[in-house]
Length: 87
Image (cartoon, rainbow, N blue to C red):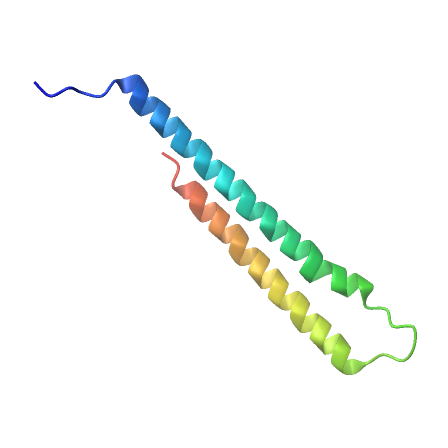
């Protein structure tokens, strides 16, 4: 007769797997928030030149901020995808 695994072991393995997935998703979402704050918002708030505005610097800041917002959104979506794997 084959030995069947204890159902409590299965439940525990499922719980541990879910907690690992939630921890990973939380970490990824935290990185997404940091990317948004540091790369997406901070340069926009810091863009106050003391002299005449430099159009190329303004465009570069806008592009950088946009890229960081997109990266943040992709990371957040990835975290949501990790959570879909919960059992």
